[in-house]
Amino acid sequence: MISFKTGAFAGALMMSALAGAADLPPQLEACASLRRDTERLLCYDKAVAQIRSGAAGVPAPSAENMFGANSDIVGKKERQDDVKREELKQIGGTVTSLHRGDDGMMRLTLDNGQVWRQQDSDVQLMVAEGDKITIVRAAMGTFRITDKSGRFARFKRVR
Image (cartoon, rainbow, N blue to C red):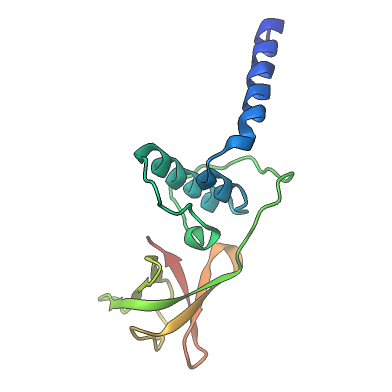
């Protein structure tokens, strides 16, 4: 059972935190608008690391930068429907590096530094270094890349 003193103290802490919310660093402000829990949490982690390291001039994480970000360690979080959240449906980029593994799966590095790995082993896409591609958010947390001929495959962001 919570005592009156404990409840009053917790309330005072919450009010103090809310009063200081207007002074959030821009790195944290950028993360607050992300809709997907995993992308938002990873954005906060990246922003806090930037703040702690004192990385001046480093741009705040953006919705595009966090697109497709994932973590196998992230637990379930409570949903906060009262905050308007942004969800990108797609991003574009240029392939700077392409490697095929022994299993035939592609691993693409984009000009924004993101790395994506193919998930569909039965699809052979025709993508080359220098190609401009679009990554589209698909159903059930998957992402899709379509090649010039219209064939598509599912991909997962690995970095």
